[in-house]
Length: 288
Length: 166
Image (cartoon, rainbow over the protein chains, first blue to last red):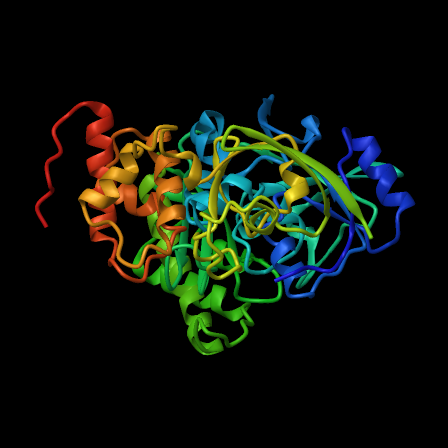
């Protein structure tokens, strides 16, 4: 499979990359790990006339702590997420998610920035970033701004980022020590996109759920922030009745497409099941 | 339109060429360099037959443009055996443990297994299965591939290979 023709650019730093995007045709695209973009280019669903490769830009790499915040450079690969001791200690859900993305070869090149930036509803990280209340740092010709993950996704492949902007980093306020987390993903086989998946971050106080946030994957045009589903479990011990209410609230906001993974009705139901399972496991992991 | 100069090392040998930007690494290896060990299976990032080692990472060479590999060190199945033809321990292991039938997936499988053992020198069977989950084999049912990788790991670690109970 041969992609359309394009000019290739490999800027050495961020300002050069942003300059290129401003100067080139409007259909210039940035390429990170390329594991979403290249398959789309092979199918000619994407035919950029220029590719601006972010691979050589050192400032986009790495994971670091800044006070209570964790900053993940956009070009950090899923493989590097798996190996990060900082993330294992402070945001362990990210490792649980990364192990369930694609396969080892894809994780060596696929980046967290690419996973969240392009607005593919099948990607796993957007829903997780909603649960973590992460914000995305966007840099463009007019400077830098931050957009909350919960506000970033407008539709399938449509986001709050402007064409000239590059997502440079993800900032997460680390959940408190002792928090509970889980990512439950139903898939047909290792490496598949989710039939339905749910991410949960919660805290427990006095044996009961004190705070809770839930994100859902691949059951609508965008990842979903399931606010009502999280609300109904607060003050509970994640008992069967509360979990059933959370499932129902999660199901109510889904609108999945029917595809090879199942009918719309089945995938909606599975969104509910994944929500209950993730809540239950996150609760069991949390320390009061 | 849009040619770029690309230089890299393939199996220890420096190579350089002017290629169209849209040439995938697998096509560059096979068609420009005649390195036909990496196979084209699905060409859609699923099967892993085109797996090569690139700067210490296993990558599917159908999902990276040759220009992105500028300056990289690439290892393919052709670079595994010693210069005198002595098989790499993983090649020997796949032969001894019947880790292949038709052989189509084998170059990718062995190059991937090589990186896996670099990162995890004594993997469990489950870790091997997850480690090769990006490589499809339609002949063996994977049983003998897992055994072959265990055989190679044991030999590298200087311990006796013991077949796990099934």
